[in-house]
Amino acid sequence: MSERPPLPTRADYVAWRTVTTRWRDDDAYGHLNNATYYELFDTAVNAHLFEATGVNVRLLPQIGVVAETSCRYFREIGFPEPIEMGLVVDKVGTSSIVYRIGLFQGDSDEAAAEGRFVHVYVDNEHGAGNRPVVPMPQEIRAAVEPLLRA
Image (tube, rainbow, N blue to C red; front, side, top):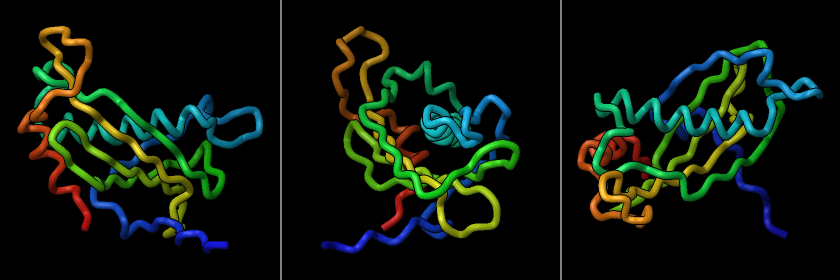
């Protein structure tokens, strides 16, 4: 039987954003609702893209659509403490980007959860059936390459 990989730590991420939790983010058991984790992953990625490119990424000729997401849960988090979201890029392809997002709450150096989030770039102008396009916009590539971690 193989050992579990070590939990992701703050040192594994490159860019950071802090969000406040809301009462409605918790489920009936008092911890963050599973759907909220995915909203946070989406926010971490797209907020970075908006800020790093300086453009409205929704209006680019090619846009990133989510092709894959997943979440590994390590411990409970929830309202009322803020959540720190760490962002790193594992791979930049010709038409796709693979991100990891770590969620931290409190003083722990270990992530409470980690998401995997894959954007695939598709034609936003010609209605080409959302097929991947090559290459992705240069402003996107320039915004995510500094997040690559060897």
